[in-house]
Image 1 (cartoon, rainbow, N blue to C red):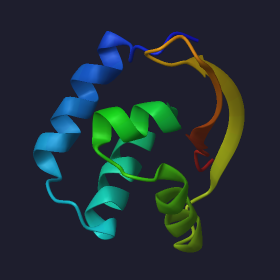
Image 2 (cartoon, rainbow, N blue to C red):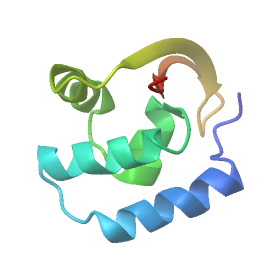
Image 3 (tube, rainbow, N blue to C red):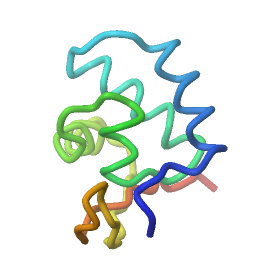
Length: 95
């Protein structure tokens, strides 16, 4: 997967950033949950587009709060051409 965030996600995540400002863990969780309600997000996207310093910690918190989030591993290529295995997070939908 390329390091770039798809345009449709970039627009939506930019709107989330505008609506959920701040650097606290609570605010980061709010941004991440808002993003996960729209689509899956990988660690790169959460970090870069949602200003979440350490996405796995926020995922842990959301899971502790009872949100059913799965992790799917994927490989991305960073800005320097390096390959990285990152988590892609998916919020399971209620039936």
